[in-house]
Amino acid sequence: MVLMALGSIVLVVLAAVAVIYNGFVRRRRAVQMAFATIEVQLKKRWDLVPDLVETVKGHETRETEVFEAVMRARRGEELAETGTRERFEREQDLGAGVARILVLAEAYPELTASGHFQNLQRSWTEIEQQLSATRRTFNAAVTRWNAGVESSPGSLIAKVAGFQVADWFETPSDQRKARDIRL
Image (cartoon, rainbow, N blue to C red; front, side):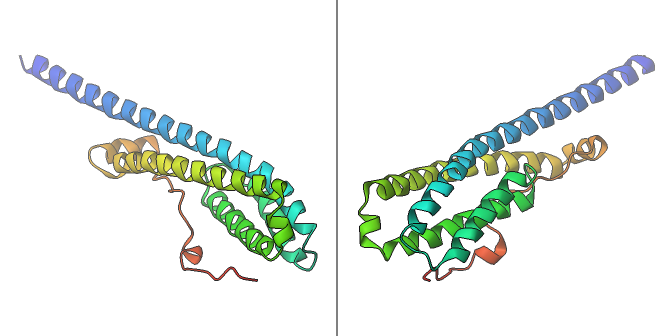
C-alpha cells in the first residue's frame, strides 16, 4: 500500500515535470517564431536602406558621415548574432540613422516631390508599422517565456534544464530620451 502511494506520488511529480517542460518547449518555439517574423520585416528594411541612402545622397553631398553611419549600421545588423541585445541595439541605430536621412531629404523640395522618393518613404513607413506590430508579438512571447522561467515551480525546471530569461526587443536606454534629429 505504501509502495503504491509512493509510486503514485512519483508518477504525479513526473507528469507535472513533463507538463511544465513541454510548456517551456512551446513558449520557446513561440519566441523563435516571433523573432523569425521580425527578421522578415528587418530584411525588407535592410533592402530598402541602400536605395533610400543613394536617393538622398544624390541631392545632399555634404552629409557623407550620416550616409556612412547608416550603411555601417546596416552591415553590422547583418553580422550580429540573432536574438542578442547587440542585434536589437543595432536595429535601433539603423532606424535613428534613417530618420536623420529623412530629415535631410526635407531640405530638398524637388527630392521630396519625386515619385521615387515618395515611394521609398511610403515603403519605409509601412515596414516600420509592420515591424512595430511584430515587435509587440515578440515581446509578448518573451514575457510569457520569462514568466515561466522566473515563477515557481517552473523556475526549478528552468534552472535544471538551463533555460534563461530572454531579452525584449526594446529601445536601448541611451535612445529613450527625445532627440533633436535636425542636422
